[in-house]
Length: 154
Image 1 (cartoon, rainbow, N blue to C red):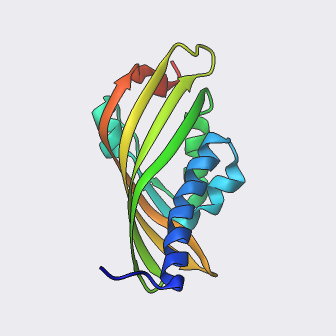
Image 2: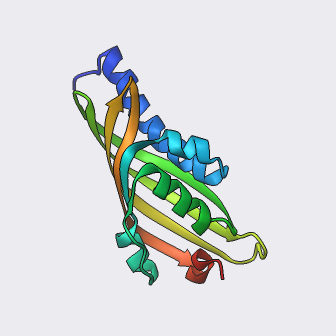
């Protein structure tokens, strides 16, 4: 078993930290933090997870579009996203990250209604100005429980 060199360890942590910024930006309703995780031409594809929850969600293209769409879609919810089991592969200024993300969605106007999802994130990242940014994120669902209508703000 080989050990990582210090620079590889730092890059690995920085790649995972981009996903932490993404999740925290959503949970804290901090659009600047969310935007800081995304490349300008980023793509977010929640279609696989949405289909399993029983609804359609478009592919989102561009940092501003992603930030606006996620902020609007989740505006009536309190959310917590927990990232686990990250696996990172780095090749120069590109990286691939796979992680599990547990996403709890609670209706702000009725805390008894919630929807919990365990999702698999497949993330492509790029390094720009020494910062790792999400280039493409595809989210699939492993399991889910609760009331899926919570996601629609209903």
